[in-house]
Length: 471
Image (tube, rainbow, N blue to C red):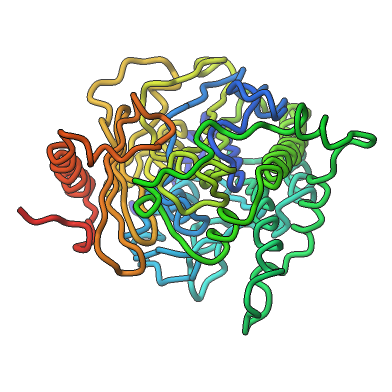
C-alpha cells in the first residue's frame, strides 16, 4: 500500500512539474553553414524566418558540430556523446549500446513527462529498431523532410496538448546542393556497379528550381551582380589540402574541372536552397504563434553540419575546415532569455551541449555521464565561470582541436601516414596556411597534441590510438 501511495504521489509531482515546463521545438536543417543567415550579415541570402527567431533569442556564432557528416553528427546531437564512442565514421548504420539509447534526447525528456514527437529526416544509427523510437520518440509525424514536414508540424502544433512536448522538425535542405556535384561527376565517372550514388528525384527537382536564374537576366548581370562572388579563400591551400580532408573522385573533379562560373552557380543554388528551407521553417513558426504557444515554447534552431560552398575549391562536407564544422545555432524563448543577442565568445559543441541545454530549460537533470554544458545561463545573460577553452571535432580519418584562436589537426589519408597542421585563426581566418612550418611550429604542434589528449581524458572519451603521439 505504501508503495502504491508513493507511486501515485510521484505521478502527481511529475504532472505538476510538467505544467511549468516549456514546450520544446527543435528545428534541424541539413548542411547549413554558420554564415548562411541574413541576420549574420550575409547579403546573398534572405532568411526572414530564422532572422525573426534570432530577434527573440540568442544566436551563438561559435557553434561547432561533433562530426561534419549527417549520421555521426546527428548521433552525437541525440546521444550527447562523441561519434567515436560507437565508431560512427560514416553514414553506415552501426550498433548503439542500450545505455547510450537510454540517455538519448527523447528517452530523457520522455521519462520526465514530455510527449516526444519526431518529424522529417532521421539518419540516426539504430539497428533493429525504428530509428526515432530507438532514441525515445513516441510518435513519428512523417518521413518527408520538406513541405509536407512543415504542414505536419503545423498540424501537430494546432492540436490540444495535455502535457509539454518535444517536437523535432528535421528538414532536408540546403542539403540538396550535394546533387549538383554528384550529377556533374556522374557524367564523367566510371560506371558504378550499384547504380547512381544519388537516386532522390525530389532532391534534383529542388536543385533545378534553385539553379534557375531570374527571367530575362543575361550572363553578365547574373554572374557579375546576382551570384555571390568567390570567397576570399576560394583557392586551395597547399600546406593544408592533404591534412584537412579527403581527395580523389568527385572532389578532384570539382577542384580541377569546375570553372569559377560553376562555383558561382553552386553558391547561387546553395543560397536559394537555404531560402527554401527558411520558408518551410516559417510555416512551423507561424503555426506556433497561431496556436498561442510562442511564449511557452523554447525554440532551438541548428544544423547538423556545414558546407564548403567553394572555399578551398571544395563543396560538400566531411572536411575539418570551419566552413564544414561550424553551424548556425539560435535559441529563442520570448520573455525568458536575452533577445536579439549574439554570443561571439563561448565555444559550443552542438553534439555534446544540446541534451544538457534542453534538460536545463525543462528543469530536469541531464544524465550524469554526459559531459556537455548547458547553454541556458549564456542565453539568459548570466555570468558563467570556467567555460570550455576548446572543443574537438572528428571525421573519418582525423580529429581537430579548436579554441577561439587556433586549430590543431591530425589526419591520415586512407590509413596513410599521419599529417598534422596548426592554424593561427586570429591571423589566418580563411585557413590558408599551415603554421606547423613556421619557426615556432614544433612548439605549436606539441601544444596541440597535448590539448587534444587532455580534452578526451576530461570528457570521458577515448582518443583513437592512431592519433596519439607518444613522447
